[in-house]
Image (cartoon, rainbow, N blue to C red; front, side, top):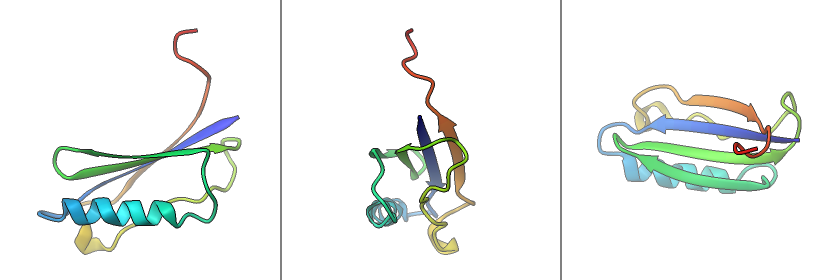
Length: 89
C-alpha cells in the first residue's frame, strides 16, 4: 500500500522564498527517505510538500515540522491519503 502525506504552509508577508528553502531543507532531513517527494509553490507564497511512502494509512511516518511562527502566516495544513491506484481504471 502507498500513503501520501501533504504538508502546506503560507509564508508570512515577503518570506515566500525563505519558506520554500526551509521546506526543501526539512524534507531532505526526514528520518527516512520516502518513495517519492515533490516540492511545489503557489500564489500567495504557499508551499506544498508531497511525500509518498510504502506504508498503511495508520503507520507512523516522518513529517515536516511546523515552522517558527514568524515564517508563516497561519498554521500548517496537513493531510494523509492512501493510494487507490490510477484514476482512469
